Every structure is written in structure tokens, then in C-alpha cells.
Image (cartoon, rainbow, N blue to C red):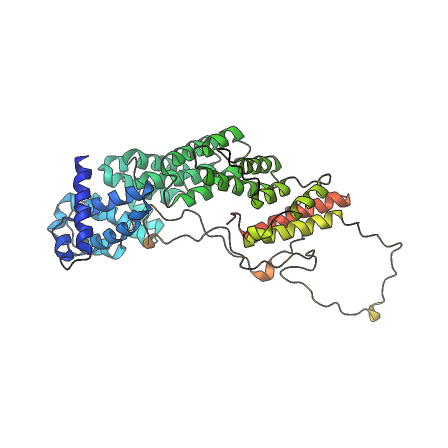
Length: 459
């Protein structure tokens, strides 16, 4: 408590000095480790949901950068200042500053090895960073440095060694509870648990995140991983467990999560999950239902499409107020209505007899009609402003290591090679013989391809 009070006074001094001509004097009078400790406190407030602290983080990063650049070799003889330099780098600092300061510092070989790994990490050289940091045990370091190092190593090893990465993320949380480091470690653990197919770990990490960091400005990344995890692990996560996790959210966030799950489940053909999520989205809490939400009605309709319910579904789709839908969901509604119409359309009659072959000399050239949409698109509307569902990776040097998005970029397909919406996917089985069943099969394929173009999250 005493350290926190001192740090708060330091932050107050810095912010008051920020717009005053004596600001340079104020930051020069403080040791680098004092500035970086203040930065950490601000980041912890941000993780707890204090969005007003975001501008203070930017200001403190700027002031810490200037102080660390100005520090001389004598300053870095103090181990606390050199550790502060490393923590600054792993908190979103400037790799040029870290590299320049390291070049004039005199310290122990292990600290220099950590500095090299941090510089490689910030400059987007993961292979070199892993080699430099591999022999260093975060648990053997002072907790403030060890926590960040465990987070960085866990992030670097997530792709090739997920089990080791999960252990390192646990160490980061153990060394730095209640901080931005723990928030980032929990958020990444959710995604890694999905990749490992570990439903128990996924449910535990999700529960802990919702309990502690639901209002973090980075919680949208958790929501992406959570929805994807529920879909991927739907056979291993009970509806009761899902309800327990979401019940800790505020009503609006819970509704949005269920809407997103319902949408993804409907398009993936997970009818039971989609029906459950749609019902929970409509149910609401505290006596406030969401039955008039057009998104819930749309996703519930998609989850109940069968040859026996098609007329009811068409009626529900017709009652949806499209003006209250996002652009992406309006396109999905149009597609669903077009496909539902195709299901009930009478099958095309087969010709009475096979026509005689046309002599080669009389054959006419066939015009080339292959397009990105294909010749058999069933009148589906063009998709405008379609974007990839996965966001691009943020370079390590452009933001805090603890805050960088954890999802890999999905390569955008060449428009000239996109399959027609009505074409069967390469992995699809044969078309059913019954015309209605065949139309239903095409429905799922078309909606799946449409969702790939639109992205899975409703606005």
C-alpha cells in the first residue's frame, strides 16, 4: 500500500508537469525505475477497466522513453534501472531506445541475454528471441521482470509448444496477480486451451477472465476467443457450464455473446447450440426480455431450418425488421430468404428423352461464364465491404507486448478463385437424392461461404 501511494504521488507529479515548461526537469529528477513503476501501475488500472487511464499510459511511455534514452552508463549500474529498461521494452516500449541503452550499459551476462531477446522480440525476430530467452527461468528472476518474461516466452512458444506456453502463462499470472500481465496471460490461455482441445482449461480460464477483467479495453479479444472456443468445444462444454460463465457478465454483454454464439452455431449447423444461444439471447435478465431483437430472430430461424419447418421459417424471416440489422446481417437475411425460396420451389422436370448429340461441325462455341460469384448463385445479392473474419497480427514493436492481438491473419482469397456460393466444397459428400434434402444441403454450404465473406461477429 505504501509503494502504491508513493507511485500515485509520482504519477500526479508527472501529469502536472506534462504541460509545464519544467516537465523535462521533473522527469530527469526521477530514476528510470520510478517512471517505469508508475507506468506499470497505470497499466494495471487499465486492465481493471479504467479506460480513462489510457491517455496517461501514452504520456508515461513517452516520458519513460525520454528518460531511458538520457540515462548514462552510471544509471544502469543500478540493477533496478536496467530491469526497468527491460520491463519498459516488454510494456510496449521503443526497441530503438532499448537497443541504444543496452549498448552503453554494463551489467551481468544474463541481463544482457534477456535484453537481446527482448530486442529481437520487439523487432519481429521470434526465432532469435526464443534462442536468447530459452535458458532463462522467469521464476528465478525478480517478480516484476520474471512476470513479463514469462508472458513473452509463452507468447513466442504458443504456436510450436502450446503446453509449455500454457505453463509459462501460468507462471506469469503467479508472479504478477491483478495486473495487466495477468490479464494478457489469461486472455491468451483461453485461445491456447481451444487449440489444445482442453475444455476444462478453457472453462476455467474463461471464468477467471470474466470475474477479473471483463471491463478491460482488451476484453473484445477475449470475446472473440470465447465464442470460437464454445463453437470448437461444443461437444465438451455443457450448456449449464456456459450459462455459469455468462451469468457473471452484465446483461448487455451476455446478450451479445449469445447472439454471436447463435450466429456461428447456426451457420455451422449446430442446431441445438444455436437454439439454446438464441433462446438465452431473447430471454434477457431482470425481467427485460430481448424478444424484439431481430438478430436473435434471424439466428434462431437459421438454426431451425428443416424440410418440415421451412414455411414457418420463411414467415419468421419475413417479419424481421431489416432496418435494425447490420449490413452483414442484412446480406445474411437476404441469402437466407433466397435459399428458403429455393427449398420450396418445385424441382425442375427432367427432359422426356435424351436429345440427340449435335454434330461437331454444327456445334456453337460456349461463352466463358466463370466468375467469382459463379453461374448458379440463386440470385444471391453481391457482398459489399466484405472483410476477413480474423484481424491482422499487430507488430510487436507497435504496441504493448501484453496487449497485442493474438489471432493470426487469414489470407484473403483471390477473387478469381473463389468458389461459387452454390458449388459443393471439396470435402462435401454427395448430394442427397431427394430434391428437398439436396436443397437443404446446399443451404448449409451457401450460408457457410457467405459467413466466411461477412465475418462471424454481428455489429
